[in-house]
Image (cartoon, rainbow, N blue to C red):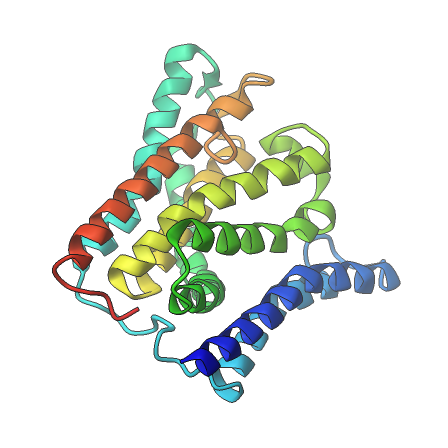
Length: 282
């Protein structure tokens, strides 16, 4: 058992070091190849793909195996449904609060156009997030659980590594225009806020994964997040009063972040209740 844990610790360290450095390597590549289309660069491709390649290598050739990767569908259908509803529920509460406070303007909201694009984005993001969740929940979170770390440690390690993996994206790959459409601040502050939000989301993502022992409901959760809130704000369907974004933005707002944290902790409570009668295999 001690040998197995030491091997897992070694592999997790390798994964984390690669994940935290590969984006900056991609930034360096882009500096040597300056004439590339924005947000479609070779450096960005290296940043996106490398963590998955490392996971495949570690699971296939470094003694990890695929048993706890969560690739199988489970029969917990109510959790799949809940995963689809969590971001719409919190976003609805947030938009209602924005309307009641007068901090949001919905005059430019194109209902038909918004939901048409949302449906297309959702399908695309199911594919994209299969690969991402194979990495972040299906590997890093699963391996931290295997090490029998306490819940807070799992949240912190998985959340911070996941969040900081995005740092090169916010510092380099993401356009200034997109950042300003979300929250017009400098890249340093934007990165900090984004990483803190992903740390909060990690509680919810982790607990859905642990309850279902599958990455598939987390893929649905993540795909809905990408399709629903990013499109809503970045494409200008709602306008948020200046400096109120930090409170009610569906992407980086404190109100939705608090709600997601409460949901994550509620999910943890449900998992522990389930585990008291049916001990989990992950």
